Amino acid sequence: DVCSSDLPTGSGRRATVIRKPVVLITGAGGEIGHGLIAHLANEGRHSVVTLDVNPLEPSLARLVQREFTGSIMDTSLLERILAEFEVETIYHLAALLSTRSEFTPVTAHQINVEGTLNLLEFAQREAKSHGRPVTFLYPSSIAAYGLPDLETKRRAGRVQEDAFNTPSTMYGANKLYCEQLGRYYAKFYKQLAAEPQSGRVDFRSVRFPGLISALTVPSGGTSDYAPEMIHAAAKGEPYACFVRPDTRIPFMAMPDAIDALLALATAPRASLSRTTYNLAAFSASADEIRRVTVDAFPEAEFTWAVDEKRQAIVDSWPADVDDSAARRDWGFLPKYDRVRAFDDYLIPTVTERYR
Ligand code: AKB
Image (cartoon, rainbow, N blue to C red; front, side, top):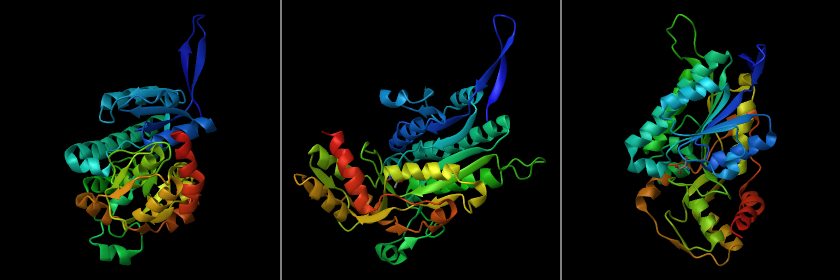
């Protein structure tokens, strides 16, 4: 899969320049981008082009073919990328997370929705120009759910994709809508036009649970109490947890999140029965996370300081999700349950990080 173009040489002959297809990652400097860039670079099969509002850390920048520093709202920058690269896969990771989005809902809408629309339109045009569908990976979230009260949350158990799609946050509403926007591009885009134009964007989305990375601390999320707790303990800093001890949502270790995106990206299209899939790895209460953290870092100073407003957001997210469609359709199988996530990944890696 190469695209060639003829360029004049000094000798008057024409040389063929081979342009390799690239993977584009937006929000590349964030939590998921870190692991994804490392994985793709290690694999060596794809050249990676990144777009982020901040410059990449030098260790990451070294791994990519080209780094663009700028916004997904900058359509002339997207135009430049379109002109220069044959993008065959997009990981659209740029977003404003749930807590931050509640403080600036209009900005959240601009970045999370209009930004995604820009990228979908970009993908549509890329696919048209190189004649093959562009695979578009979109991380949605458990924030797309909104359970009305704790009793319903307790009774609901493992929630399926199409239940309780009534989010209470701007971020959740943005994610839910963009899942639908992606589905529209994939299946119905300009359905009244003379020439069919859908199918150029091969949109694939996962609803991630709370993600926990041993290498980065997220910013602006509401499930962040779990990673914050672990990183604070490893650094020897006190931590005040902003949710109740019994607060329960699903979580996933970052390597499983990266593997899931990569597996979904390469799954045969015919095997996908949906455009958005739940993913779960383990469900844990805040107190269970505290206990394993304190076992590993006995010096950890820990208090509960419940923020009722952020608590209400986490209470509206399911305690667990049903990810059987992902397991059935594309073989999703997380490596890390709660014990392995802590024993084999989080504790050793986070300890090494702050040594
Ligand atoms: C957040 O808390 O906003 C995110 C999420 C659950 O999508 N981590």
